[in-house]
Length: 150
Image (cartoon, rainbow, N blue to C red; front, side):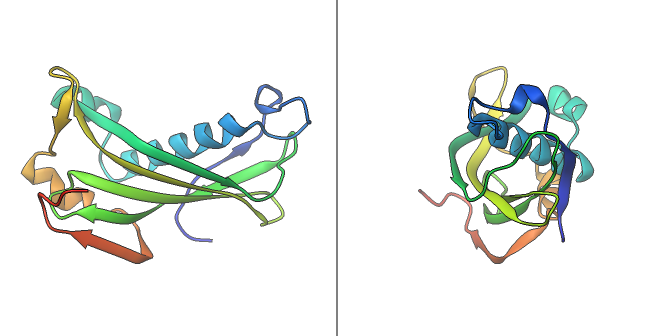
């Protein structure tokens, strides 16, 4: 399996009344995998603080395929599916797998960057755009021109 950015145990606190992983835990694991991916690409929390920017989501879609039980070890993949050439907008697809290699969920997100001082959308500094382009891409990856409206 490629592009695994999180592997960990499902905890009691992540279980719902039906005795399987609760819906919001899928989103939490996907968010953790995205932050690990960013950190491995050189975008640490410290860098975000220095630049006064951070990732922000516009949309998050979760498709639940199979139950995940307590104490299972899950793996979360992460690939970029779309990006503007200047890195200002981006989309990721993530898949969550159980320990038996069964795909349990698909998470898709669309996002951008937030200036944490002005609370407005921001653009990555030019020297970091090339670094952002090194993130693993999906087989159906598409790139849009900078300034494209969507």
